[in-house]
Image (tube, rainbow, N blue to C red; front, side):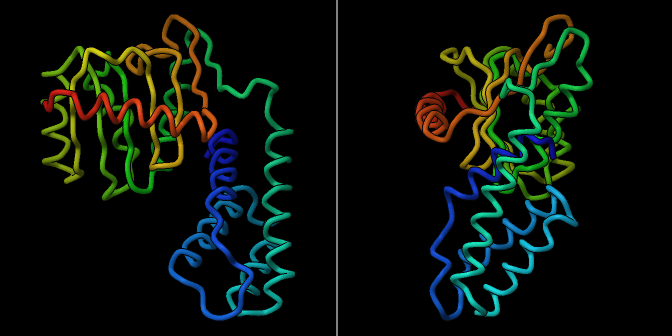
Length: 232
């Protein structure tokens, strides 16, 4: 997981945090959140995150929940600050001309983080998205593709991909899309500086996360375009 993706995941984790300080048995939502938090901290640093894991275990066993909750929240904020300080000043991942493989790895990394759904919006999407990126999806993850140009090319590739892997893939076309956007699950939105099929081949491009409030508005916009689009 790249530092940029880890950072966005950690920020989304804080925003989705359920109440955790009360006594008694946790709900499935609370267990799920704590499990995700542990997994992200392990991804950040297996050794340095041991105090975090210990605090979570204390909360799970109903031991000093208030104190351990403070440790958990403070630890997440601390890691966010550390990751931010380790990044270049630019928030984007910028890829110069010829850095096609670096872009390929970064986008594969992003795709592999999807837990429920991947949604790619790209008017120039072609079958390469299946060869290069869809195989990074974990089993059972559904996908939506919103495109405009190479419709038959994408449709045939999608049919063969579904036949082999069984993943649920929906494709729609619309002439109202101009940007390149990737939605991961329901809490992340990333914008691309060029179409996936040409990214970083001859011109520079970028892969950049957008803030949660902007992501919500972008999703509303593209949900409307999707609803009006033509199924392929």
